[in-house]
Length: 285
Ligand code: AMP
Figure 1 (cartoon, rainbow, N blue to C red):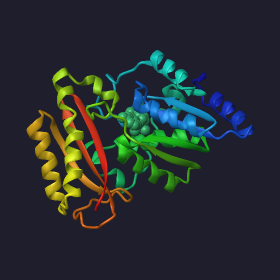
Figure 2 (figure 1 turned 135 degrees about the vertical axis):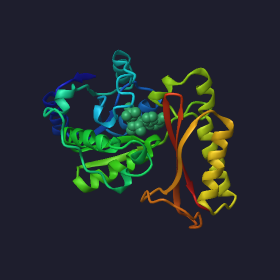
Figure 3 (figure 1 turned 90 degrees about the vertical axis):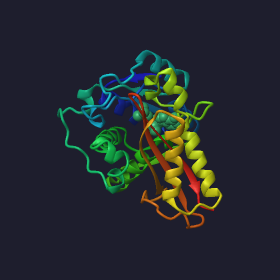
Figure 4 (figure 1 turned 180 degrees about the vertical axis):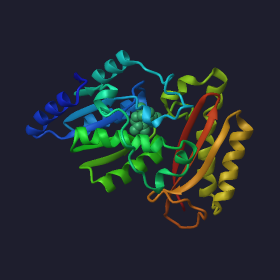
């Protein structure tokens, strides 16, 4: 595995690979790697000849009140994990390398990025879109692997790719969970023992919601109420939102009556200082 910090070095190495006909798989991350990240890496390694992983904690996607200063870093361990998972190129750029102009102009985002996470974390998706656009410009032609754990992020990035016509193919990969259902997240390290015991309520409640739909529930309001009640009654979590959207358009869904339609139920909840998100896909029967 080669570790590079400069855009130029990365691009030189990528041109060599492309010249020998190798397809590029790219996995953008903010480090503190766990099995959620390595599942994306393993998929890329399996599917593409060359896999590039980037580790860059992007300040633009954190607001002033958020956890940028405390965001977990584990660079030596991350390097070891990447090498063990057969990454070819590890790109660890500095701020200056990604944003040579200091504060870049923020990327536009469509309506998809303005609801749910976009509403609770204003400018978050503009920050994500800005760094992702920068990374796509640097890496060029590639298959890019993202996790469905951040489902809305995948939708925002797909929209960005379409609007900016980046020569990339987005591959969305399933959420990796702990045995009790808690989605792996770099932010889980903030949970106290009690909060850690509470947090699996999110996936439990999402699954109860999926069962309610399978049993014929047609009202999104009833569904959201059931899920909210479970989270409030079975944990000390501070619920931010529960919502239901069309999996393809991300438009809010009020009636669960369209047989065969693919929907996503999304949830965000704070457990102490850790704000966790999760989601589940359901097909309306
Ligand atoms: P992050 O380092 O948090 O920006 O995440 C980098 C990538 O890993 C994103 O595409 C995330 O959606 C993905 N990811 C994070 N957690 C998980 C998980 N539990 N399962 C699958 N993918 C994940």
